[in-house]
Image 1 (cartoon, rainbow, N blue to C red):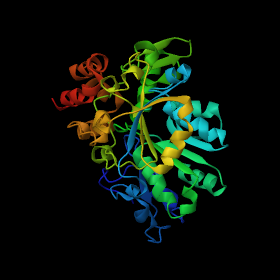
Image 2: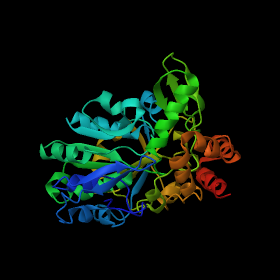
Image 3: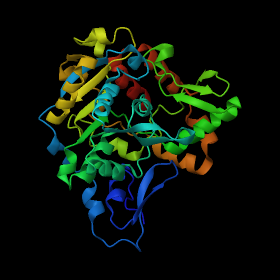
Length: 392
């Protein structure tokens, strides 16, 4: 039996699976690869823990936050870190500080065949794998329990993820407040997460097209056209790097819960929030983005977050900015549902990837318009223009 029948009521954070003491809940993929909890009626004792731990829509995270976040424009002083990160290299400075204290860092990396997964790192090499945007929902299975184990062993832990993931982890751990003392939560400004099954099919399609195996992927290769553009590159086994626009930047394959996300606001479920500082050129920190190499926006949401942020300031260029100057769309409201979202899911389930690639892929005028917007329209208005295109 599936716990959630509506789709939009579950973000797939795995808190319910992790908290179940009887192992009665398993996360299973739907046709798009999104994980949902299913209950084994033979194991379930109706204890209700899975319902109590669900943080989605409850607003429980707000108890951890100060009145309003304090925003900063941030850029790593190490230019190599900037160029190998997708914005300004803020996260790597935070993770370096945790590693310096012999702590553990959890972030999103690549599993086998470039499957998007959460992983555990205890060194710089491992954390480097967390750099860069991954526009696909990560697999969290087993991770919450590993975080709890590390905290129980007295380790310092930094966990980064989407806000629904950090909220789920906080809800899972808050029954033992002592564990939270050594945990720092960092969420990203999230537009929404795309379908894992379609990502897998897309990679298979590219390998068939090139007749070679992919050995590296980069969702946003700013080494080619700069930070402001969205250029995806795929490196193949012969060493050749190819550029292919990712097929589904039109929000048609987002998880349904993303369209009703309660965390797309300034009440964040984390100690710190990080993301691209779109529109930095119109603020007092304009110099940090003028070379088109990248600038991070960091929101300090809690006193605990301030402690960690202050500890890494020497590794960063930092400038406090006005909150009104950095209110990106997904800091104000969720990404609207694409009218074709339901139809896309049915077409993919019934007719497969080849059909939806041709019907919804990057050869139609809307996708070409979006690529034009990414390269030419100013940062501050770019998200609004993309949304207008999506509604036509």
